Length: 171
Image (tube, rainbow, N blue to C red; front, top):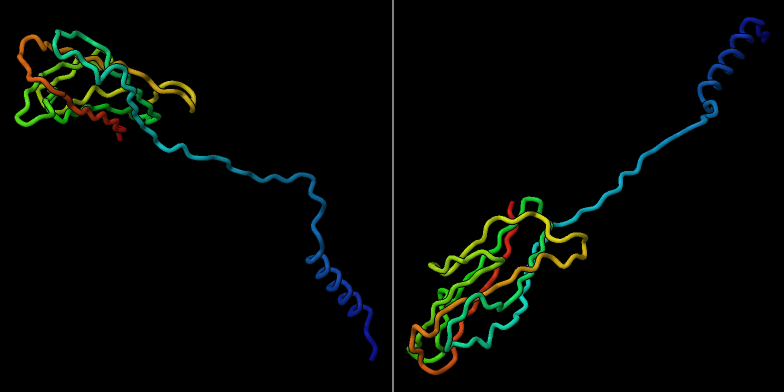
């Protein structure tokens, strides 16, 4: 069997063409890719109370703006936060004995008067971030008490109230 020149040239051409289709592409001089980095900072609010002189009140005198505690607020919430205070006894020092006497008192928190006509009070919305830096100590605010123990004749004994401070992130 004799193959013609034309058939031979066509076969070689087809073989070279098919090899070129599977050949390695030409040298590439640059390339790039991307990497996205990131993380998340969760919303955080917390509050702590350091009693200064809260358990040794003189209940036989008139007291005006006596510092009883320092409250530290911490927040990183952009929308801000509120602080509220709730009194177990309706903002009254109550005797710990049966049929107890009561002594009403007033509070100031960060120079803001607390409305003691109800058992709880919420302060105005505060800025979102307290202090600076992740390890900051927060914003510390003074809590002071005022009362007139001379206007009542209290029985002897211990008197107390429990205040609960709550910090709430705004949404």
